[in-house]
Length: 420
Image (cartoon, rainbow, N blue to C red):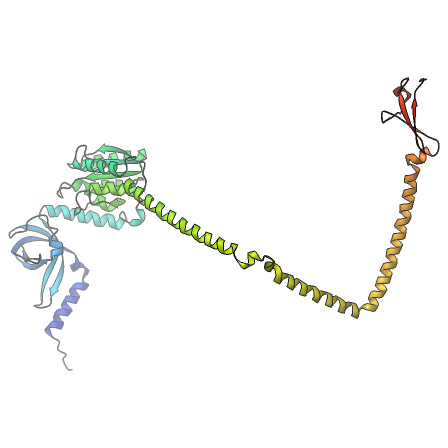
C-alpha cells in the first residue's frame, strides 16, 4: 500500500483545526505566574504563563489588553481567561488571552463568571422578560448612596431634562459586607409603592467595591420587580450581575437618568420642527386643492353640465326605441289574440263602469233625499239669528231680528211676541 505524505504546514493546520473543534479549549481559566513579559508597540502583550513545573506561551491582543486595570509585570501571579490556539508557523500551541486579573481579584471574577453563567442558563437575562421603560414617567425612585456624586448627577440630570418629574431618593449602602441585603429590602419596598421607574445608581470602583451588585439574592430581587429598573453602576467598562438582570443597563448613573427621562428641550424643538413641517405640508395640500378646484371651476363639464348626462340620455333613448320596437313586434305576432283579449277587456270595463254608474245614481238619490234644500221644498223653513240657526223658541226674545230661509229665498223679520 502506497504511503501518503503530507506537508508540515498541513499537519499544523490539522492540529489547529482539532484544537478549534474542542469546546473545552475555547474557554479555559488558568492561574499562574507571568514571566518573559514583552509588551509590543502595537499594544499586543507577549508573555509566558508558568507554574512550578510547566509553562505556556501567551499573547493578549491590544483590543483586550487595553481593558486591563493594573500594570502587568514579571513575577505577578494572575488569573487568566483564554482560548488555546495553535501557531501554524512553528507548530506550537499558545494561549490567546481574553481577560487577565491579579490573583485574589481573579477569584472574585471567577465567582462573578460562575454566577453569571448560572443565572443566564436559568433565563434571568432573557430579553423577553425585560420591561419597557416609560417614555414619560411621573415619578422616579433613585436608590443610591445618601451623599455621593452619583445621586447628585442623577438628580441634576433629571431636573435639567424633565423638571416636572417627581424624584424620590432612597439612600442605600453601596458597599460593605451584606449591603446587598439592605438593597434588596429597599427595592421590594419601593416596588410596592408604585413608581414609574427605578434607578439603581453607584459610582465607579474596584471589583471588590462592586461585589454587592454581583450577588444572587439581589439579582433575583431585581428579576421579580414589577417596576422597570435601570442600572447605572460604575463606569462604562464595569459590568455587574445587576446590569444583566435589570431591564436596561446604563454605562453611568448620568446615563441612567438620561434613559429614564425625556429631554423637554429636545421635545420642544421636535414639536416646533414638526409644526413647521405640518404647516408646510398643509400649505402645499391647500394649494393643490385650490388648483384642483380652479381646474374644475373652468372645466368643460361644469360649464356644460348637460354633457354629464347627455350620453345617458342617448342610451335611454336607444333603449326606448328598442323597447317600442320589441313591443310592436310582439303586437304583430299576437295581434289576433290581443284583439280578442282587448275586446273582452273593453267589454268588462264597460260593464264595470255601468255598474258603478248605477251605484252612483243610487247614492245620489239617497243624498238628495237628505238634502236641506229638498226638505225646504216641502214647506219647511230655517230660522237664523245673528247667522246662528235657531233650534228652540227659548233662543228668541221680543224684537229680535231674524232671517227665515225658504226654498226659493230669504225673508227678514222682527219678533213681536214669543209664546212659550
